[in-house]
Image (tube, rainbow, N blue to C red; front, side, top):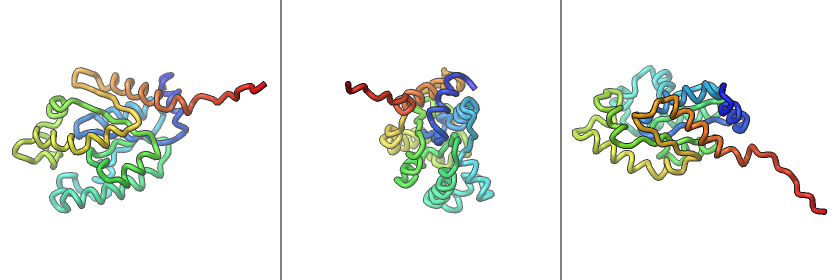
Length: 195
């Protein structure tokens, strides 16, 4: 655990860290690195959904539609928020449900913001992205980002990452950004002498 990781883990006092952002933003990769540095466990809501349903995300979308998938996603998140000392990688659209957002706000929320062109390079041709099963997937990706951007922007911290940056460097920046968020709460209150 790095000095920054130790400082952040102490300041978080066991609350969870939720990573939000678009598909392809690196939430799972970066989340694992942050969790390792904090000494936290790591969970991915999409992975849990696949384990619970015994189906892939595309299969769930095909059988239940997006609304059915979102209902399962909300149930999984409701279980995950009971955890402590956990870094949680969330699905890109999880923030659109106000209940989900309220639950994540009990922890610390970090937005991994990646430029559209870099996102598209990462997800292009990925069959596990049912929302991009579209004649013009890049335009669809831009539409989804536009729909979600305002909610993402309400996160406690935002890290901009590009394809030129290593996951380790992005994780380091994420930890530093979260330290700045918790710093005021981590500072001891010193009473003023009134005499």
